[in-house]
Length: 511
Image (cartoon, rainbow, N blue to C red; front, side, top):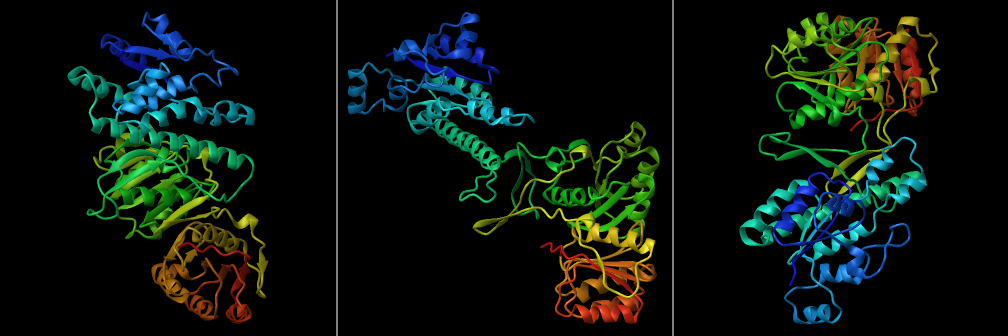
């Protein structure tokens, strides 16, 4: 019985060498289309699939391998008497090796001007069918979808004349992962194209970026996966220039810092610890912005993650180098800045494309046994239905401070209170079980800087006690969603103390 291998690949990396080795090992190679031409042009003996099927390729190549002469050879059990008899009766020969990868659907839909017709034409049918057939019959068939597996397959064939069952099982599992991912890209693209927001089935596909040393704690295993078609403005696509490998917690914190810093167009710096901002600063230069972020909380910034929305120059690098930091993320670093910062062996320096600062269509959060899916919180100050509800209107400086606080507070764990002046946070109260508790933490951190500052709250005040505490701390302006049945009590308390208060109409819960 002739040993046969079927090769039909879109990605031709390494395929010529692989096919030559198979021929040298005594395999008859079956092929189609561009793969067949490549092999023939390089003097590799090859048999056209239509010679096996006795049927020509039809419908512009849509039908060529969907034939019993092919799939019988892929699905027949080589040692099952009834299968062997039926295959002999119909002249079907077994196919022991299948090497297939698929039409470039993902590359096609990545094009900004892709049409519905282009996407549909790049949906592979015959390839996934052959892969699934061969993978199902992996007791007998070696199926390869990844060029990285060519060397091991050849090594085992040369050593024993066949691959091990362990290898065939591993490759079969990889095939089903591959075809599942391929189908998910197709279903998700078509679902999005027709405007279906929450389909009856949601399949998400991510690719392994790296294995991590551990998770949140050393006793937890972890890995980092990236979205193939995700935004370039993502920690998954950031370029690391220097430093240790990122940890699980680094990635979480870096993502949090990026989400905050992209709120600003003017130079801004964000310091994050445990996914909450400990300092946010703005200025006319990135150096000034960082100085403000540092001044906001010089204690908590120790060991923090810094995100900057402008390139790091020498002066800013000198300031950054004076503090122990885990990560610095920015659009760029000057050569002088890199020379300074790379003196620290472990600090991670990363660049990211801020021109692609957008969010995915949906946020996904895992819970035990399920997923929560929602739109990102894109609501900002310009979208708010701003209403001044107190007797006193805010001053120009108070408006600036409230806008800054409102941009930051939606990124702070609820219950959240952020105290700001016109350029920086001066107090952050995060993740408390009641709003007054969050306010007290923010006021304690702010100290005297709370006098004349603004307060931003992620949700409404159910009672007037937060306003009363704000007045005692010296707050002169408050921005909050409003909507409590006791709003008037808070308004009255603000009027009593001469505080200007603004309602936005939208809350910013963050759990």
